[in-house]
Length: 539
Image 1 (tube, rainbow, N blue to C red):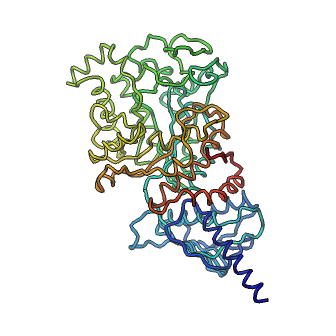
Image 2: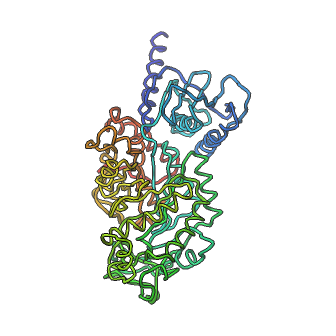
């Protein structure tokens, strides 16, 4: 009998250890015990304040979707319950810190902030069995945890392909489940304008629709001749922003300027330096529908017809941003700034005259003038700009934060100028790049395997400790030229999103790729619970 008891204890200990391997991102401190707490439909969720409601709702939605039941909530203390509390701790200097205690008689999650309590819920979710049951055994454990970086982001491009409100919410859930806190929403591009602007209805009526899309890799082997349309109403945007806030996620909108503006110019040709010239069609592209006048682009790449830096354009953009800022409470407004060809500016008499009148050096100086003009306006509204690293060209706007995508050099340069930086280099975090050597569907860019994402270090070693403090964190980018449906987006996200979440949450010294792969085996089972499409191949 004694041998049987010892054997049972050993099995419980082994089960506990297997759960330890299953938490992604890896907690800062954990102490594992023996035994378990049984969570079932009779378990009560105790909220010590109404503000815990967001965390409780998220847990209940998860339990309902994955296991088929919800928990009753109360503010009355009870034994055998899951208790959520928030107690500011002067000992903690980290936003998002929480403590999670599981005993055989109950669970306590206590955050320094409500956000911290929410992150404790995400860890509790990862302690749940991956097999569906009405009685869920959660191992006894004590965890203290907090994030390394304050900015932990994921971007989605809806300009190239439009995605439904339901999928955007699902995407936000993916962000929350990985303890990330920023959704960068790329809302405008050459191939579509996706946000309702009431003062300029043609932005969505005309700019929100392209007549067709190339087939295959750019320039394509043909055209599908199928209109691709879609935009988010302002009411839908408000709903999404609230949905994100309930998950402690900040939504940063991106309104591209001065490049990647074909959709806006198609709607309002006066935004171009050459409003009478028809839209240029890239060499080799098969075009659908009319090619006269200004058109929304049907192929990918970079196009020369960009915003003209005129009073009309600046007035238009300020009007647009007024409506955007009314919808998004985020500190940052992303103004793009990338891939802006200067060809049209070089041949525009207006632009050349403006360069001379403003005492600018060249067209790069004109781009800096453009960005600084918009920054002053956005700053006057109490917001800050963030932009791709091309905003460094011609001189960085005084209060700008740089999103470094063309490698890390732009971020290093900005940090050395005492500007804040979000690292998002294509080599490490562009999740539209192929994750296996032989993908069975269209992708873009270079090979980006899971291990490369996992081993990324956002703070470049060439920065001093003081300069390194300007690196706020990093972000994964999902560009959708070759992602026309949610399943493809999910396939490209997973499991690389899980790797990135650990890069941003866990200290560099604690990360170990081999251990991560062991934990990933359980994470695969969670993906199946979530009913997501994911890639199991590692090369």
